[in-house]
Amino acid sequence: MTLRAKTEPEQLVLALPHRPAQEAEDFLVSRSNAAAVDLVDRWPGWPLPAALVVGPAGAGKSHLANVWRLRSGALVAPASRLDEAAVRAFEARPALVVEDIDRGVGSEQVLFHLLNLAREKSGSILMTSRIAPGEIDITLPDLRSRLRATPPVLIEMPDGPLIRSVLVKLFADRQLAVEPHVISYLALHMDRSMDAAIQVVAACDRLSLAMQRKVTRAVAAAALASVAAGDADDGPPGEDAVAQD
Image 1 (cartoon, one colour):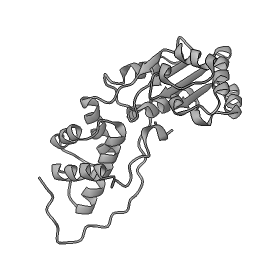
Image 2: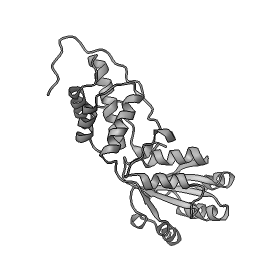
Image 3: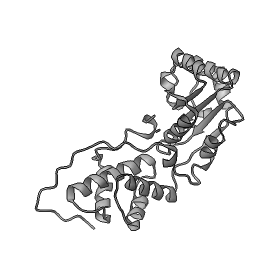
Image 4: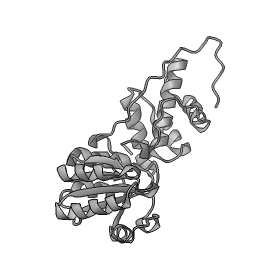
């Protein structure tokens, strides 16, 4: 089904930013992320001072890390920017999120020192990575050994039920009523990731406003095509770039 051409000009729509919800109540749970959610729920009773959440981009790592940040009062530091300032901050507040350790560590010595401090101060460090610790390129032998000894908690790509729930939540956040068959259509044809869901819903919102019509299956199809072509205007920069993610 295709959209019919309209003779009247489209309504002018301002591209207003929409902040993705990143609170605990916004994190939806399914089989794909249950183990990682359980990890957050068990804090501060972790068996080890450091934990590592592993999953592909778009699986929700940043959002989950933000949930733990809100619960623990942790600071957030991209692994690529780790320096001595992170050590001083951790000494003042022994809870830290270190994101994307697979994308390079600014100072391997600093990360190793932080892991030691977490043991000494009964602190907590939550690390995220797209790949298993044994696959991460680490030069410092002590750090490489320490990371490989940290049991990874896996978070998988969202399954079908989770994607549908996420779509419903994202549309509700934008005060859009969308029929179940449209949700199912989107879930079946979109990339199965949190980022994709955010971008598709944003595109549906933009198109429905421009056409002054509700989000139908035809609008959903046009939104999918827009996202595939890279035309969505207010999607996020990427799950791991948000510090959720």
